[in-house]
Amino acid sequence: MLDQYLISVIGEEKQQKEYNKHNVLADIENVILLVDGEKSIGCAGLKRIDTTTAEVKRVFIADEFRHHGYGRKMISEIEHLAKNKGYKILLLETGVPMKSAWEFYASCGFSLIENYGPYAGMDSSVCMKKNIENYLETERLILRPIKDSDARDIFEYCKNPNVGPTAGWEPHKNIEDTRRIMKEIFIGKENIFGIVLKSSGKIIGSIGLHTDPHRRHNPRALMLGYAMSECCWGKGLMTEAARAIIEYGFRELPIDLISCTCYSFNSRSRRVIQKCGFEYEGCLRQAAKRYDGKILDVECYSLLNKNENSGN
Image 1 (cartoon, rainbow, N blue to C red):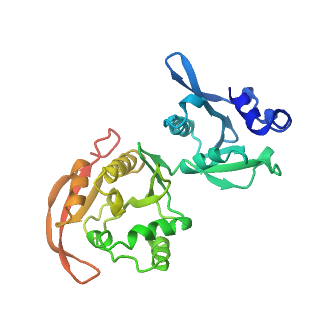
Image 2 (cartoon, rainbow, N blue to C red):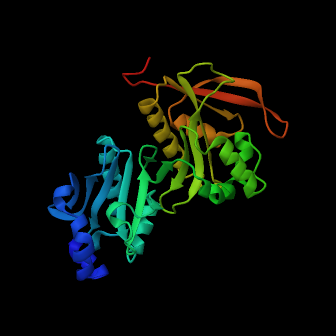
Image 3 (cartoon, helix red, strand yellow):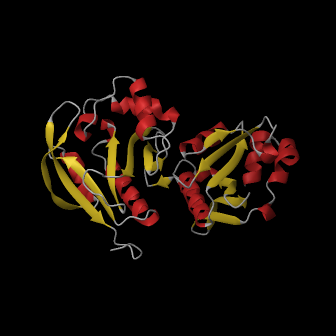
């Protein structure tokens, strides 16, 4: 089915001359098959490049099953397989005429790169790359490192006067403010993620784990912090992202405790914290001076790592 589809898009001569030799089934070590009952409706494979890199091959969903989320499910499963195999980077190639395909891959977190390996110099090819080591995925979100190119999306929600003050920071005045702050606290920092809404591909917030030097001098404790665009409030998205980060922290990092705080007036943040299972520790009265000079009470919460390998 896949070969027939490719022939219909790029032509049989080009398919046989330029592409068939790069899609030899014997080179594909792992395959995922998507089925509906006894009917095969989709597939994807992995081809080993080196110890850290694999190439995604032969991705296909039958026509009648497209636009129902099966493509994203397929990519999610192939990434999970790649992680389990120890791969950190995924590459893929698609065709210039297949614009909907590379737009779809971009919405899944793949970025355009120069044509690699056998596709170098092929004007009809589009090559893409994704670093899966630092990517987390939930039902509706992708959590990934923040990039310079995210500045406009981040400025869009950080300029909102209802967002920053509830977390203690001043609304951004202009996009240069955003770029400066991104360099200071986001870009290149460990355990800090942008929150991408799958349905739009836009950054709608940030979330991460960082030290809490003012309240805990414990190298095995980190603090959860987050912010989200007002247009996405009340939909459970922040709770969804926070749960993923908590799972990541306790699974991947050498920590025994995650703390989280909110101002006493911030009922929305309090609900997120409570839904994630944090235990209330108490209120630090007049504990924080905000950017505007106001002194505010801070509610403190914590969550212990219950995994077998933790120190608890």
